[in-house]
Image 1 (cartoon, rainbow, N blue to C red):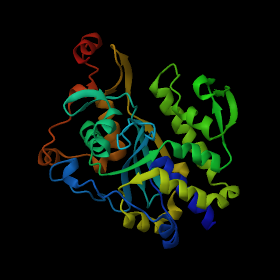
Image 2 (image 1 turned 120 degrees about the vertical axis):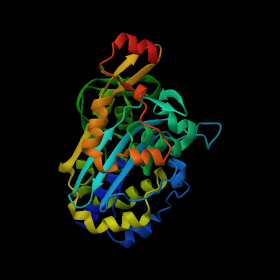
Image 3 (image 1 turned 180 degrees about the vertical axis):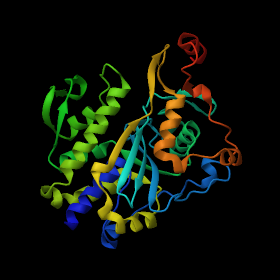
Amino acid sequence: MKGRTIVAFVLSLIIFGFIFFYGSTILDMLNLGNDDTIKGDDLAKGNEIEQRVPNEIFFLMVGVDENSQMENKDQNTRTDTIMLAKVNLETGSADVLSIPRDTKVKINGEYHKINAAHAYGGMTLTLQTIRNFLGVDLDYYVAVNFKAVEKVVDAIGGIEVDNQRRIVIPREKVDIPAGKIKLNGKDALAFVRNREFDNGDLGRVDNQQKFMMNLLDQVISPGNITKVPQLIDIYKKEVKTNIPSNIIAGAATKIGNINKDKVNFHTVPGQPVNEGISYYVAQREETLQLVEEIFGDYVLTDAEIQKQNEGDIDEEQFNDPELNKEMQWQNQY
């Protein structure tokens, strides 16, 4: 049972950006090297990096490409998956908000797709951008190399999915037929990154969310208990986080409360537009209402916004349903 629990939480890190380990022995095995380079003031004036709500973790999970092919090995890549998550250790529940990678936001005063923030300024600018976009007190992150998906799937012997549409990528020798199929690591990575959907990035987000739940179901099966050391090794090589080790260790006492049936997925409401550049434009009222409902304890007050000198949320980043859509798009793009 203990081994099965460890497997479940190793996967939870890779999926949701958070991991709990049972006992100090496993923590020692991990030899956690947390990122302590980001300071509170780096994210907002007067901000302190802290656990805002007891027994709860609020963090950003991003999937990034390895940059081994880049000329500059230290160069940042664009984020390919962006999810904001809240895990409550007392209730065992979690809420995960997917932010489409094409979401139009201001980065350093200019409009870009939200996934560009990481390329321009790493995790610091990514956290800043999402704080300003959604008006939330976001301090923690977990960055997962996409190679982790491939390695985890191969480690557990493949993953079964219901593929809605054939995926063909000749240059990578990928051909995944429609229907129920078991994927190896390479094909699983192609599956979660596929963008060939009638509704664009929204279809991709939905695919990723379903994939994550399938992966969770399969990795915690009794047959995968023996894969614990291999999964831990994947974590050490492919995951980076600034969640303090003491918070992770403290979460171990709440391990039995976590329940995958209490994991709720959401997506930033909006719509795709194309005016030379394809964007996903969030709907202001619906987005802020959703954020208030699921992350209410982390929404910045007017006083906090003023203190941090960030200004109010930029309304131009959202689609105002009261405006004429054609005129609005002409003005925004």
